[in-house]
Image 1 (tube, rainbow, N blue to C red):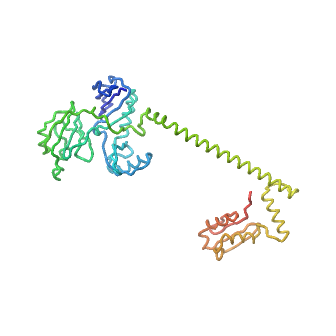
Image 2 (cartoon, rainbow, N blue to C red):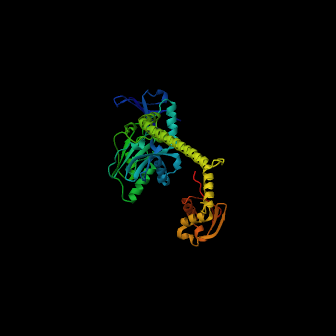
Image 3 (spheres, rainbow, N blue to C red):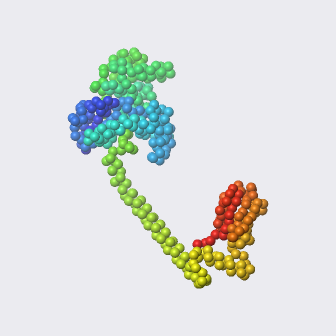
Length: 397
């Protein structure tokens, strides 16, 4: 598969010319150049390298969390280190050491602009890397600069590589300040090694050495195209459509299985509901049949209530208590309140099967608990005020 690699600077696409490299099917560079998009060679895949200061590498303590919450945690952890609003940045975790994580940060809008422009050119990118990922391990006590035309990537100076602007042929002011601080803390490096790109300005190593106060040497030339490995910045909202589609294809069997399980659960639940409705209908029909048999001359309105009313009348006719009589209701209230019944009521009132209770201050503070206990005894309970309850015998349907 052929691959076109682009070196995207801060001025692109306003200045549409950029460096590019074409990788052949054998994985080797088959062509390289610098031109406008219309002169870029055809390729099956496109990726780009985000130059210099367009990305920064930060470190923070970051507890492990589900992927959907990770972005929020990163924003919170890095908020004090960011100049721009946290929501305006795009975050890519590159590596971890326990809770310590290194995160590449770049402007979300800038990344969106590049991806949209390449997509419009028919060169939708599949991968993006940051140039500050280009540098390898640095020897202890050594500063290394990979210099391009206007910017350099420095390593060995701070905890992570970073990019800085170059001041022509003179040493960068940031590097001079770092050398002064290292001198004060007695931590000057043994040397500063420069790797210059072909289009970088010439360096007067003697002048740099005089300004920094440390030996300055030139090493092998630097090529941005040497950056071939690193963490892809195109994830989340920037995930390429092809990769998103591939992910969906891989996940399709799992999604089908989950969908089938949900459909089966819905089918079983629907079946249970229909069965329960049928049983309820059958119970109501049997109740009506029993009521007609027991009271043939009574019109049927509410069989359960009517049956209960008739039974209570028969009980009273034979000198027994109906279940909605005052004494029967009081017995249930006494069972529910148990030892709290003593001094727990300040008033009682009974009328037409309803018992009104006025709770004492000792119980009114736990009125919800009293309601639960009464309901558990088959009573219908309605709260009338802060300390009043209306109680009736519940009718079973």
